[in-house]
Image (tube, rainbow, N blue to C red; front, side):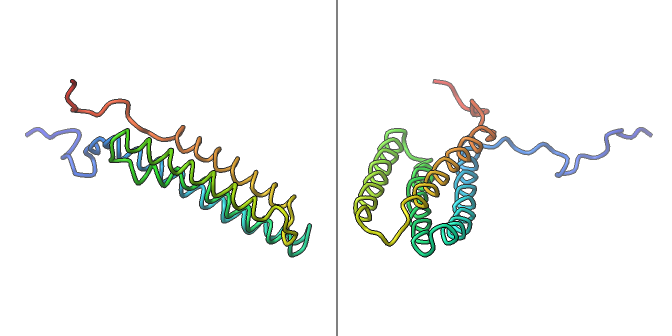
Length: 159
């Protein structure tokens, strides 16, 4: 009587089915969005605290405006990419460009509206906004760099 030295193959021992490239790409975008939201939540708490210590209530308002702008500026592209992942490249490019134009307009309009007002601290707004945008860009890079997106789809037919 002979036995198989490796033992029976259990479902947990079988290699997982290869992930579809879109699933891997979706995971990268979800990670980037999740990390950005966590960063902005932490930045909101720290920015409001530091803003209150540095400039009082105007510092709080500066931090809140900055976090809102950073959310609009950093989150819209990732959300647009997630929403159009299954669309054609032309549709994806059009949506990403449209959201980029919209977010730039929102940032310009908000900054123009609050330019002459004195209820917020400009220094706190600038500092928190810079940390939010640069931090989210670093997190996006980290998500893409660490993502395991295959170059080719296994079993796909060539043209």
